[in-house]
Image (cartoon, rainbow, N blue to C red; front, side):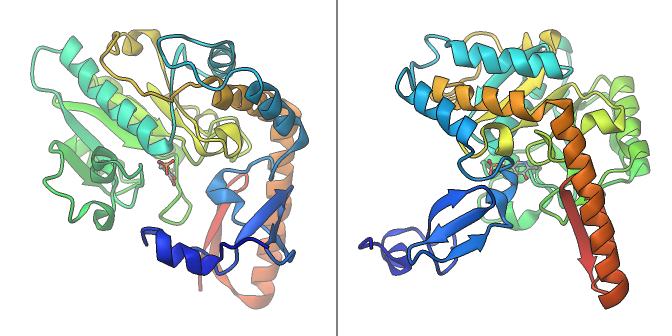
Length: 343
Ligand SMILES: Cc1ncc(COP(=O)(O)O)c(C=O)c1O
């Protein structure tokens, strides 16, 4: 038994989290075990991260092999796993170019910076407004908490970055009234995650695409939570028949090994010239080797079909429970990103 207990957390850790009373020490599949050997079914999945469960054998093999080969070489070099994962993402999505980072917030930070820089490079007037949506969540950097639509995460850290507006989600008229030549980007989660699994309507996302095109603004999809198979599609944009200009991905991308990616087109990517943006760890061989195996597994149509089948089973069983016990006012979401209003 380790000398470290939950009490140690209160003694040595900054108290910005309030973890459970037990400490998981081992995980396999959907289960974790605590220090006392008690097992739990892990319904948290690492907050939409452990899409393939804990320690899946085939991913552990890749991790071990890469761990014995090359972990980190810096972005002064590229690596074979980096190129493999980027090639797979390009093969399976709209994207022509990829940049890696380490967290969802960082990928969104990169996306927002890219949108601003693209406007500077391509338009000869002030074009820097970012439209975002109320209750959205895009990360914890100062730029991303400010763009996110929940003031509780950004208050107290001011002055906040300027040029950001928050509109009601799924309200296309509000966007129509606000968007203009000075808008450089609209950022949206296809399904708002942190605010309680609120899916965008198809009309809303398709309308955003049209309005962005009419106003030369970039459409950014934050697929940090909706991406990598969670909705039964590799990325949720596929199910909406809307192609974004920039897409961010993280969470399940390496099944728990920290990584994120920003996907875009060649034209837009051109604004990130050498030195304009970067990260020490982003795209390191270890994370990318794991990510490449995850994408190979999840992009398989049979895998995605199974997510959709499992989703249908979940939703029908939840609805049956609801008929009996009247627990939720609705069951909503897509694939295995399911939520519901509690009665
Ligand atoms: C939609 C969305 N964007 C961004 C983030 C931030 O990701 P990270 O915590 O890895 O920075 C999250 C995290 O929950 C998220 O759900």
